[in-house]
Length: 280
Image (tube, rainbow, N blue to C red):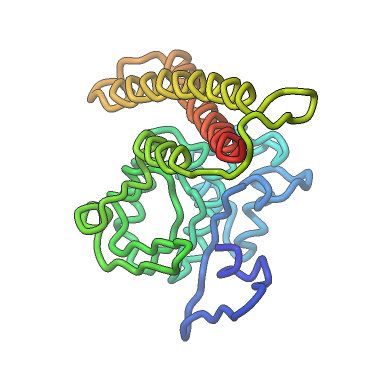
């Protein structure tokens, strides 16, 4: 997506947008996209639409939950979710006919994600996005572009239709984990099993240590995902946001974000361990 938006130069080939394409971009790191200058939210957004009135500015900020003293908050003090909401408000004002979204659900709570999906369904432009959120992809995608070692698979259809035709659910962490583990363990190496590694550790002993850590990571990942699923069901309850005290809701949402980040970290370490095991 950075190549599409001209933020990176391609090693080969070229990128060309269609005629009269006016893209809007939401980066994966929304805080970096906003910048670190010492402006307030209101001052930054006024710069986004300098010809508009202060009433328009406050109205747009209010629509993304910046009201009262929150508009005086410094950009450097924004949370990831607040930065994301501000960038989306910017896109509403810019009115691009193409939206390029890089992991747009990062830092958003369930309520914000649902509101974003509703807004994007009503959007009549072209939507190009990358996401690991299975529900988000299932709700919005009408064309799947799968990039593989063998090339690009351009599938004209929804994610569910893609699964029916192709079978691999890349957004199911457990399915990906099982498939990768089976693939890596099926790789045969020609290295001697008893060859000594750095520090005198044998290849066999190192493999057992790595596999023990891998098993622990798998267990931790399953526990975190089970809790995330329980929180998702809680958030989806019809009266959750009406009956749950604000401090308790915020605490649960913070737990959900922390667990999601933890799962990403565990999966990254899991992949590293799998590669190390395959090399022993």
